[in-house]
Amino acid sequence: MSYFSQILLNNVIPLCIMICIGAILQKIFRLDIKTLSKLNFYLFSPVIVFKMLYESTISGSILLQVLLFVFISLLLLAGIAEIIMLFRRYKAGMRTAMRNSVIFYNSANYAIPLNQLVFVGDAFTMSIQIIVMMVQNLLPSTYGVYSVNSHKNDLKATLRTVFSMPSIYTIPLAFLMKGFSVPIPNTIYIPINYISQAFIAIALVTLGVQLGTMKWQIKFSDVMISNFLRLIMGPAIGFLVVYLLDIHGVMAKALILSSAVPTSLNSVLLAVEFDNEPEFASQAIFSSTIFSIFTVTLVIYLLQFIH
Image (cartoon, rainbow, N blue to C red; front, side, top):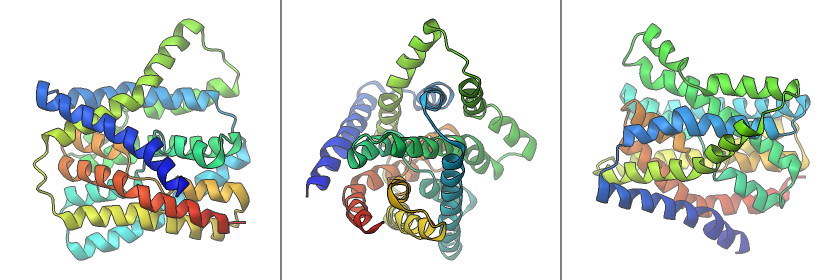
């Protein structure tokens, strides 16, 4: 019960408050959702990932294990999603939106505090979560941008859009500067901190603004399918993959927990920025965040059986 209340009070309710603020501001001022999505994609998101990677302590062996876990898990999850979408005969845009809502998950402003809560600020498990966050930031900026544009634009135009995403460049830059111990002048590091601290607030307000503009006409069954795949199948596959890769102990627990979190804000940012089923994406994020109170608590309970 303590985990349930802590997740509710420390993760879900604060997120919902920020989302509600965005929705209220939208009702009062009619904010420009496109401008907000561009701020998230081109400024806040790449800067926070750069900062966290630059400051992290990640070994090569851990990096490879985590990457292997993430990609195998995502491939299995995407495969299950494809089978379901085939039976439901989704159109191209909806297939992309559903896929993004399942494979892009909230690895930053939900998973990081959750990791600190469950593992009591353990530096090792935090380094694992940072690697997951790096992948979850890079994928929407590459595959995600490609997927939402490929059925609307030709390959050249789609690739041009992909290579305009800053995260493609900030991630290798962070690794290079960290690897060669390149210091960042304080004059530059101060604004990096300012921007990083604003990321969560701006991203959640953006989701609230999008929710405030919706007509809620998406089929309830589509949203529930997304939630089931993300919140139930996601961690179930996580348990399977750590077993297949023979990963044990606290690392296995951290990886499973990282796969149990709700849909990422990136899926709605992609949907809004490129006009690809934004109402479905917003509803999938909002509902998965609410339902995660119960599913994440269950996953935390099951982690005690991992040795």
